[in-house]
Image (cartoon, rainbow, N blue to C red; front, side):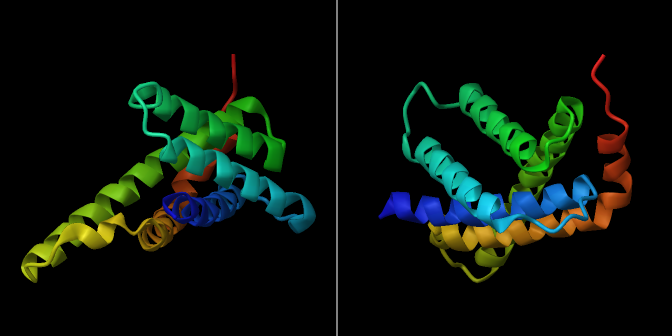
Length: 157
């Protein structure tokens, strides 16, 4: 049951990552859903598996590198952009995801502490992923004028 919850949460995240990629790469083409949906399902499965397997091997920095590599691979497959642009966009995605997780955790802690409630609802990954994803889209949308030039002007030397 936990794997299914992680998988559905992954579908939400990868869908939002696709939407954010469209913003960062200024993509205007209509998406090819026949190609997009299976890729989102596959990457959701991989991410759910990484999160489900709680081992010493996939903890810490190795897990961060694996997930960042997934973001880069996803953007490279979907948007077919230069590696430098994919690396920068993935880094922006990762940093904004971290920022939105921190913001949601702080807000939830303050609100729940005010009402003397438990933080147990934060374990519901589908609800939390949805809230975090909406926050991430908001952060990217509000700062896209500053972020898009970083992606556009990135070059690998």
